[in-house]
Image (cartoon, rainbow, N blue to C red):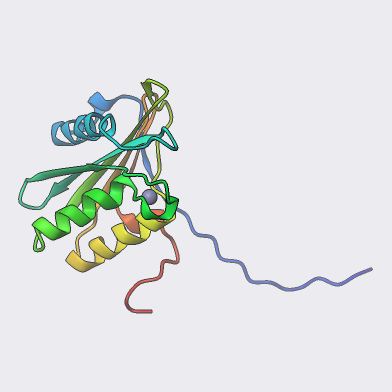
Length: 164
Ligand SMILES: [Zn+2]
């Protein structure tokens, strides 16, 4: 009984590096993570109480960081990743962002599991990656585990970009 639709399927796989300890990362990435954790504590997040910090490494070796800035009118606020990226793109318009680290501080402690950027931030990160034609490593930190993506494309399969 019934009939079978002959559907074609496509699978999309992404690969992430997984670390259990910050010390397993190269030194420069360790300092980026520490910077992200440090700036997370300075976030303005009175509504969510979810303090996020992002630190970027630019092609010229410069480190730029940012945190979330909330607002009583919720959509007017902005995430840590975009605060940092827009600042970097404003101050250093010719420098690719080669690595981004993100960390969360809430309830008086750093998140145990890796924190991943929201969809809007991924879209902005992708634009920056494409703009400079250089992959951006994304370090998503947690106290118990750290995920690293080689490129923003891994976090945004079937992405929409300027070619569309
Ligand atoms: Zn976001």
